[in-house]
Amino acid sequence: MLAGMDARQLSEMYAFADIEPLDEPLQRMIAEVSATLARVNGNKLSSDDFMLVPKVQPPDQERALRQHQIVAMFAKAARHNDNAK
Image 1 (tube, rainbow, N blue to C red):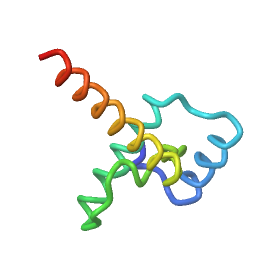
Image 2 (image 1 turned 30 degrees about the vertical axis):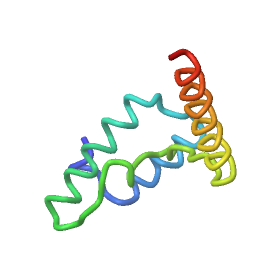
Image 3 (image 1 turned 45 degrees about the vertical axis):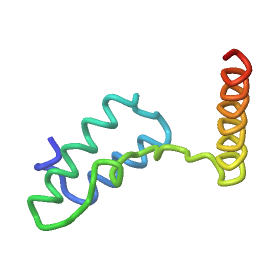
């Protein structure tokens, strides 16, 4: 399907996706095909580069807080194990 599309048709597909979002499996399939075509033509792009709705990464502050919570959880478990001996 994508092999027969020109740039105008592809941009129309992206514009339509803004109005009527595609489900994730269909997005992933289109992104995989697009990435394969890009790699065949010498580009070093991944399927994530072609996703219509990129994955949302948590902000660094939230990530740091979550890492701190995990470290605290393991420290508490280690103290509990030490007391159980």
